[in-house]
Image (cartoon, chains in turn yellow, blue):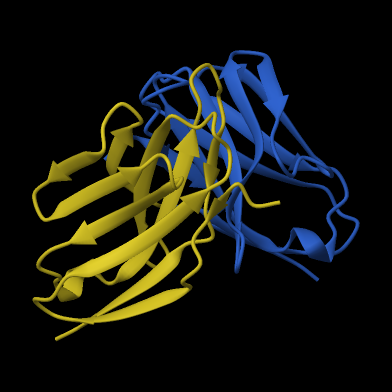
Length: 112
Length: 114
């Protein structure tokens, strides 16, 4: 039973356009959400996070939106660049817990 | 970059042999984690540690054991490797274990069990 779901295995976007990566979760105890980016043959790197007390967090070209009632979050990348081509993992954790649960990932292709 | 190294980076072994993967950090972070990455499953937690000699199981702990005798080292052992344990293994560290626990990952170990 996947508690964090990324239903799109891949996404292709033109350079300069917006990339929207989606993530759904089922555990209502989750109150902190993170996105990680992973290039081939490297470990994942932290990208951006959001606490459940917020509905939006922005960092440069990256914005994460959280809809708690729908148990849904999304990562927006504007404008998309070829260097953004990577696998993006959505992750969630709960206060007092030591575990972070990851989604299966979405592979983003940004075409020049 | 956070100082995390994993060794070996690549390993090919045969079914039934023991295998130990090592994670070493120079950040003095309290929390350490072992994940495996498989297509369609993302990153799944095997075991984690919240201090020296303090470890606990993750989602997919069967067939794996861990040890942490020093803050900087976290070992993952496959007592008798099976083909289903062919995967890419990542170690991660974090300063805090709960809310806000952004994790820093090592470069990974690709393990093939024949």
